Image 1 (cartoon, rainbow, N blue to C red):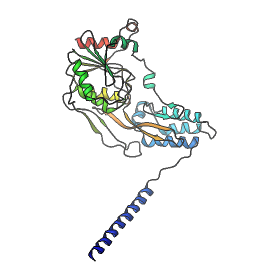
Image 2: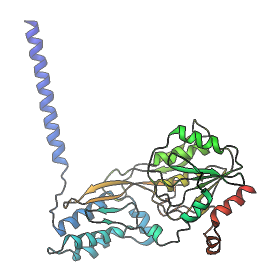
Image 3: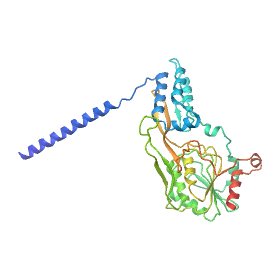
Length: 348
C-alpha cells in the first residue's frame, strides 16, 4: 500500500514538472518574437539592415571616426530596392550598403560572389614582395607549423608567419625556438598575415613574455541597442610553458596584417624586447558573428569589440614603432627595406 502511494506521488511530481516546464516554454516563446521577412528584394534589405542594426558592435566608434549614421544609411538605400530587381542587382546594392561600415570582417556570401570592403589593405602599398622573401629564405629553409624559418648570414633568425589559420603544436614551436636560440635576435615577418585563430596568435605571443601581462580588453553584446555591451573584460597574456625567446625581436607589419594577426601585434607590443617595424596594421578588432537572409545568403559582421591595454580600439589598425616602407631602389637591387632595417636594429 505504501509503495502504491509513493509511486502515485512520484508520478504526480513528474506530471507537475512537465506541466510547469511546458507552461514556462510557452511563456518564454511568447516573450521573444522575431520579425519574419519575405524573400523579396525589400525583405532581404529590411532583414540585413535590422541584423546589423541590432548586432553590429562599432556604431559609436565609427560615427566618431567618420560620421557613420546607420539610420541615414537606411534612408539612402531603401529607395534603391524594387520588386523587379535581379539577384545580382540585389546583391550589389546590399554589398554596397555593408561597405558603409568600412569593416574587413563584414561580408555578404552568395553562391556567385562575396561582398566585401577590403580598403584596409587595397588602398595602400603592399610593402611586401614574394620574390624578395624567396631570396632571403633561399631553398634550404626549414618548415614547421606552417611557418618558414632560417638563420641569416649575420646570425640573425628569420621567421615567416603567413597565417594563423591553423593551430600551432607546442612541440613545433619548441623546435623552432631551439633551432634559432644561438641567433643574436629574431625577425618575425608577419606581413600579409590576414589572421585566423586568435588562440594561435596568443600561443605564439606567449613565447615572448616571462610574466603574465595585461594586453587588452574585450566586450560582448548584451542587447539589441547600439550601446548594449557587457563591462570590459581583461585580456591577459600568460607566458608559455615551452621555450621562450629572451632576445630582441623585430616584428614586420604591413596593411594586410588583419584580425588575429592584428591581435598578435597588440599582444607583443606589451612585451619589452619587441619592436614593430613597417606600416600600420589593417585592423579588424571585432570578433565576427554570422547570420542569414531570407534569400539564403550568409552575412558576417563584427559582434564583440576588442581594445588595447589603454582601452583604445584597434579596429582601424596599430601603428608601428618605426614606420618603414619598401623602397623601389631596394626592390630593384634585391633588398627588402624592412628586413634590412630590422637587421640594423638587432645589430645595434
